Image (cartoon, rainbow, N blue to C red; front, side, top):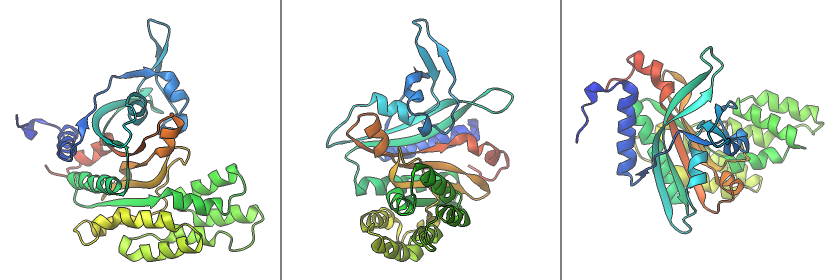
Length: 315
């Protein structure tokens, strides 16, 4: 049955389009309930976009939560598949504590998760799907991609302890190169200790323009493997219409207790906040005693509400 998009609002329309895209790529729908035991989120608070979790006690006395996150629930409820690959997509609401007067907010996400034998081919497919998702929202977009293992190696080369590492990573996410230099001076490091890291964070641009510089930095610092993985991940965009919309940007960071490898964020022209975010999360899988590798992303439909209202996209 065909859906008459004229009867849908902007959020519903793009939700259905994304679902059709993911189905076409061989992903199966994953449906979820609204509740999960609170313990799942209390153990993994750092993974959540918001610290606030809405809780209640059920009839059996268990402390439950309205789901603030989709990925954690999928990881918990899907078994390892060994040598295969599980390709799932979802269209779900999540619930989070709000700083506003209403006390909480409901958000809609459409996204995909791949779990199992995730290798270069799968990573490339996920990145292309992320770009296609943004194209469905608006032709003027940028998909920013980084490699957290390469970033982590250079941060570890200067950070003297965990607190210093966190401060440097925070500056990296903010593109605060001066802040990184100040942290290194405060720690008593010799002048220029942070040069490789600063050079990596300064290498911002399309793959064709910045990958040679990144490969050189990686070679000089023993990180060639991560740089090659990054190069392979973006190779599918080279020579395509999307090539100029793909940018290497090492400020696209995630919590390294959960994420590893390729990380990425998607932006639309006229919208300062990322409307798409994703990456590899093998580290989260290990924390939850899973053997599979994993990668995925989510599109945050609520972040598009004002965008639709302005009429910046016409169906």
